[in-house]
Length: 348
Ligand code: F6P
Image 1 (tube, helix red, strand yellow):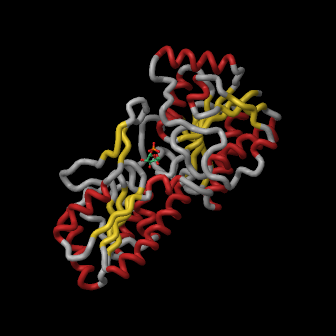
Image 2 (cartoon, helix red, strand yellow):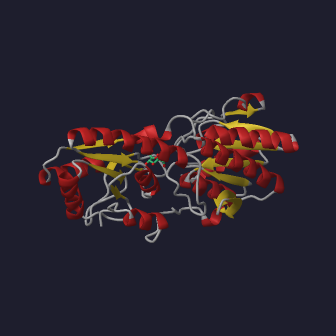
Image 3 (cartoon, helix red, strand yellow):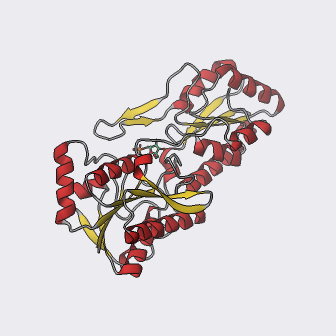
């Protein structure tokens, strides 16, 4: 059996742990030949591959990024010709199956290729934790740990100088990172894409804290917006399947708040720091479980499916119900309730 393996979309802590687990499981279980595809779907369109053996995946468990490289621009479904070429390459490479590790964009492409007859298994990857049908993707825990530490660190400056400190997280249109890290990092205000903030409410919280505590820490997801306002777009990448890149809301909020407050307002945009570095132990374990589960699905011939974690248990879901969807923080999520009950403002 010859199985292709690629990592698509943005890099994410734990990708190498998945590569290692898929390779070791497939070799160990059925002596499969594992073909690493370079730079995501770009490598499949250009037939850039390398064989992955036991030795090539040794010692990579704890390293960030992906040894295969990745791309969030290549789209084999962009035109009928590109799709045809990709399917022809699959044949030419002699692949019996493909394991695609990626976020919602990668899963949507994987689904499209499955519909064209490619036996594919998806593995959910994203720091955003926003993949439909899966309660936790690897990379999220690491990102939350990084943001939590950042919130703790800015608190020092907030306390010392009596400032309002705003920290902007990644997460696109989902507020999972901001919500979990905001709670773990003791943010006073957590602003999420799912709950438009009322500027007056945020001003009042900061003013009150100016009197009482001298400082305020605000954790804001990059996709958040003021009630009646628009999301803050950092750039558009024309040839990407998902062309909009969010960013800049922390600075926008800074200038909305500053005229109404005595204290100085400062903004920190964490950016790709959240995607870098070694995965946490939890992410290493989850990524290893996902990789092994993907190998099991390949062996069982269960294709057009994505590996999942739900209620703590490994499982899988049809790519039909994942493709083109996002998992957002629901309005009655227990963490929102907890945050409110301990006095965190959600800006509404
Ligand atoms: O989906 C992961 C993610 O890091 C988002 O949180 C962020 O909006 C986006 O990718 C950034 O992508 P890029 O690295 O292309 O700027």
